[in-house]
Length: 332
Image (cartoon, rainbow, N blue to C red):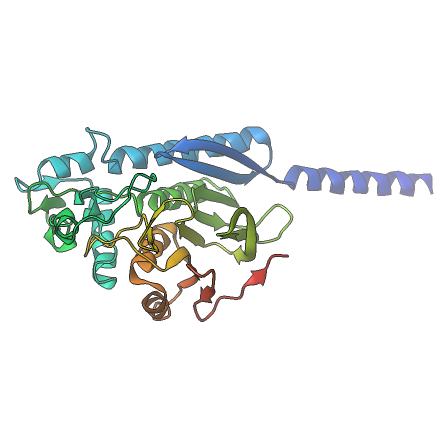
């Protein structure tokens, strides 16, 4: 009897040891990169391994920033902008492919998304200093050098040419999402079973939480940023939320968002928040910006025509609009 008890105890110890050895926890770090807050969460066996994985993600995000930053005078993006109207610039295939995808989204959205928005004159101020509308001519002039069709790609040598002097491209509306996707891909390649990369609202996930539950994302309540009105599961996909909770100006009883229509030069109106759910953060990032420009009705119709893309829109009257297959779980 005693021998059987000892044997049973040994088996229990082995099981417990095995469970402990295979148990994993979530490790998180918050830091500032690309001018924004990044929250990096990985699931790992211990803190040492978890922090190593996070460092891997930081290195990858830094690499992306050095590639696409228009603030870095040595980046390939800056070189493209410096040679606008002068000559084509040969770039890495990675940057070429990113620009090529951006132009496809521009065509898909009829110019509502446009990386040449960086050419725009900054005539709108969202710091409380604006007291009157710019003139129609000022607004028209502000986007004179904006236009994705003036970005010429040469697939033979991976070169980019901006046809007009003074043109610029920028990745403010797609770069963080792309960096999040690349960091996720790197970590998966290294064997990280689950995690979240959250780049100031550009969020992508994979795997599950250590307790086996899906990662959950909150849709912020525009009336109170500290609270959520809904929670949604995110399974191996991405969600990006664009909002104008703070960055807006109100003129003539109209609320103008900081997201400006690159086709007209006028700020978007009517929407306070737009959340996009799809397979990757890069696409979600671009579409969230596009929805603001398109407006609620056109935006919803557009999203409902896209396979594998869903959205939640909150309009300026705080009414919630959703695409066809969204199932909101109201937060109580």
